[in-house]
Length: 626
Image (cartoon, rainbow, N blue to C red; front, side, top):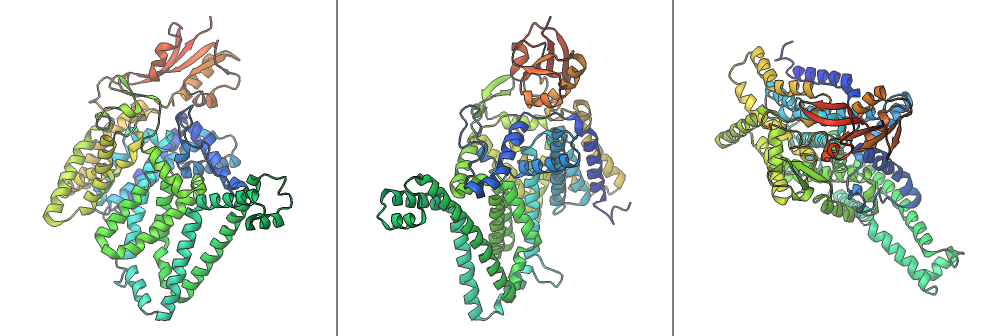
């Protein structure tokens, strides 16, 4: 191998090795606490909404507003990723019905994680050399917390991965539009040159047609709640005043008006609106594209494949978490800073494509996009989670955690080299910018993607729980900074063996910890944490119940009664078919140590097995029958 001729080859070897390792250990990971809600309820209901919307005009989501029982507001989590994983699982089960559903979902999670690592590497390549970018990716992929979440987490790690890809694709869309092409001109310059050749008469046709189309589409889709309420009011008026114009018209159409409730006709009228809107959207869009293709084909290149992919990525990512638009904002600000006012045209196309992708993949928005999106932003900025958070031996409410919570966990749950390299990289990048204005893009991403969000999370007092899984998406810039430090190191000794040895040494703490903790890598704490058990959260998603089921399958007599203290849905898929899950009078009890439940339930019953790693006990199995 000649690294100079194929500089990215070592990285692809890393991805291939990681893929092999992931596939080899896929069946070791248990279901996480949240998978039940995300897939069995939320994803499936969102998929069903596509049919319900066109049959009934409803897209209320699985829960409308706050569920008072659980305190969970699932409507405001976009379903794009879990819908995709659910559809992938259904297709795979058609091919091979014996596959374990949990493993298929975890495969989708893991492949998305690897896609995010690829995005991180090629983001680093924009500013750093191949070896430094490899170091950033290797350090990222060897974080035990990340590797564990890569399998079991249906929300936060996929969001972090797709957020990273969205930033990369957005920047590449900017390159496509504003970087010089092979002939020396940019795509934007080609389009503006073609515009100058058009006759004034043709310009007067294109501009109004485009404005009318854009405004009408915007009103028809974003104003759907207003339109629906207006149609309902119209029907109500017709019923209340039969002699009015609306009443007479409805009487001509509806012969059974006196026997059918007004709500039925309001629903029918709204469904008619939906069908007419769909027809108008298709016909008007086709007509506008035909007009441009015939008279101004160059303009269509503004929505070329790089821009289409970037727009879809940011829209799909937004349809996972309400923080998704931050990726688009980072891209937009970066393009404005680099290309000035001419970037606005590309940003407008990029934003429109992103909004369309978000709308299409988030059924809950269909009933009122603007209202529900703003409501989701309000709710998710202070998520009403009602559980308890264990931090430094003390339990807190999620909205009462101390300011030190996030900085402490970030310091303790990443491997020891990360923050040293990140601090050095920040210094290196800062000096380069001061001296010759280099590394500005890297510093901008660090500020907008990591430092500002981190500050907001700490100062604003955002509800956090399950350690820092909700903020995984802000961490990729930390590894870009680590790569900047490595890039500076690698400018001196150029020997490949030395560089490879250094990268392996940096990855060693994470890799060895993963081997010791497997398959519970996500409970990792570094050497600075000290005693962890009952001081910090460990197996908070009860993924060890899969191993507990395997153990109990071997221990329990036929038709034994089993009580599960914790999320039973993470135990049942792996238990023997004859074992009966009960609420009382069990023969065996499986207890998660979260919330110290092992100290509360059946403390005198003899222990027959326990699952632990590195002195941290996750689950205890006790024999309760004589």
